Length: 359
Image (cartoon, rainbow, N blue to C red):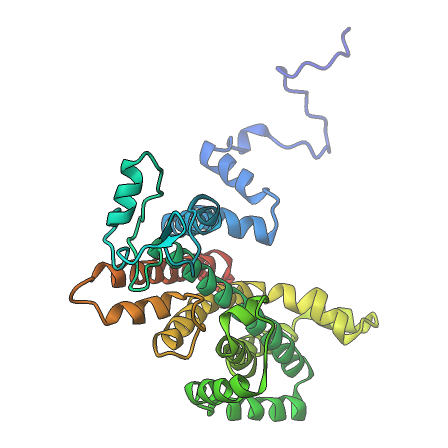
């Protein structure tokens, strides 16, 4: 029992021992303990970026707005009993009086039908000049704009990432030749290319009418081709610049010394370290593509009728802006909400995932 260790009693210091005097040390403060916990926290690049993104109130608000829009355009066609190209009728008879109705307004035939005990779903945004429900057309127009923005950004991402990775990693003469090609593509006028491709594809290509591209028309196919031919150059330049600095790091040299192939080094080491630039550029490319599609549809080079688009709806409402100004308000507000939310989300992703912007 005499040899039992007692923590409250300081052991006797023996001669020539390395025992330290406890009075020489101070206890750690609560702030130092908290700092040690933060320093010892284990996380990944994606988790750390998402944690920073959740602290950005504007980005979270943008995500909520985009989710509400996606839920709305997905659920609306299952709730609203009208089609985007359906001309309103009552009991099988065309309702000619349902032209340019105001929001939540019924035509005379619909009022008579309701008075007889029938049920009629309200026209939330009114109707257009061809007696079609305007709300469901705005819903399908939003679907088209978001689809175009998403697929265009994917095309830009794939082509730009492959081209920029090869150019930046190989370097030398190959890099010089590939970048001169990029400079040539930068000099091409994108609007002229869209017009020319729309004329050529409209007369040369026939798409199945039941397909997605067939309903939107050859102009949308030309827009996708233009994005694939022209708009990837900015992404390629960004990724090339990142790779030129990343490939000089020691871990790239270590991978090369172990015999790793160039493709594996690009996939496993270089691209993951460019992830912040890729995420931010892709997020900011979507609103740019949506705005381009809306602009082209506004001037008549976008979606083919009767398929609506937010730009084509705004163009159609422009003629009656003095009489029916609300028709221009609805698609314009939707374009502003989508573009603004995606821009704010892109800025938030840049702040969260770009290491250069961290303190």
